Length: 121
Image (tube, rainbow, N blue to C red; front, top):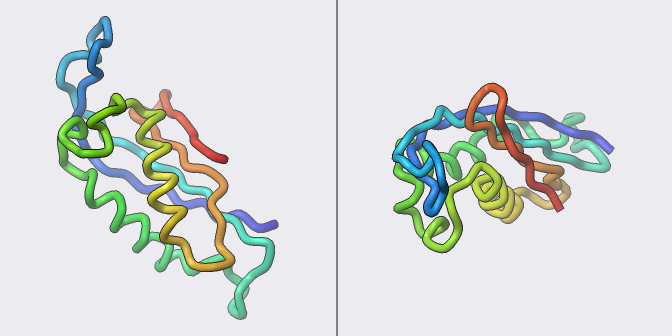
């Protein structure tokens, strides 16, 4: 099995509903996103997927979140815009857009250099 790791980032604000503490107030993060892709065989060029192609797909997904107030997005109308829920939403959006033969191991979202959450199946 081969794994490919891509890191990127975006900026967005949110607040946690019904949270008892500072995070209930509006605040922002420079989110870091780590994507781990997998394949059991390489393509004819010896790649899981071209980094350029993978970054394009990931960028298109993250563009919807970049410089937004996450609470206003339909994804977070029911669920709190936590780091954990963000990782899960990004996981399923990316999983559905990957080409045949490329799988998704996990997505980790970091709200700071020291605090992050991963989602995988």
